[in-house]
Amino acid sequence: MVGHSSDGKHVVMDTLLPSVNPNTVITDHTSSHPALARQIYESALEKQCDSVDAPVSEGDIGAIDGKLAIFAGGYKAGLDQGKFIEAVRDGAAGSMAMELFGYRMIKRDFRPGGFAQYMVKDLGLGVDVEEGDEDNAKVLPGAGLSKQLFSGMVANGDDKLGTQGIITVIERINAS
Image (cartoon, rainbow, N blue to C red; front, side, top):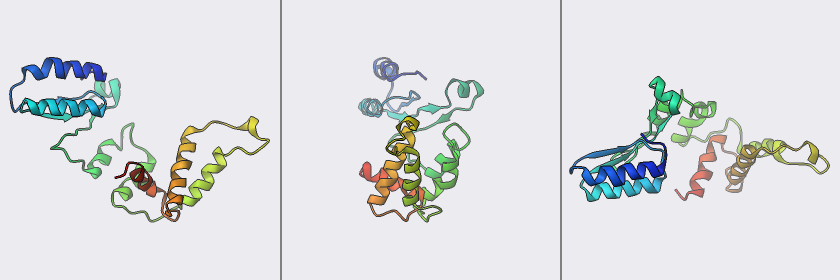
């Protein structure tokens, strides 16, 4: 495992690929740009090899403790979203929101516990600055982004969906 895309590119493209035999499987644990993963994949195919992009999480401490999570992708890999949640739920990527809404998003269960329209209202209370109150204003970029995404739900007519319906806005942004 190397730390940067440029290092991974050098090791795989310049050192490893020129010397591999056909049918070799190359596994890259670098957290690198998706374009590099595609380049490695295409170059591996030219050598009649397979390539798996498999970055890890949990950093140095996770490596020392033997608790790394590996995220593998490639043309043979399919993401089992339920297994993904199970794999990351107890690590740094886990959260109460994932516990409450992760499986609902997978199942496309957007029944509300709270409506998206109320999230817009509530987030607005935290990020909207009233005239004359500028001295008390705080910059909350995460809340501002959340308000924009939930406002997108409302604009799309999804104001009565549960907050987990935010995935529909992200899908629309990415045209998926």
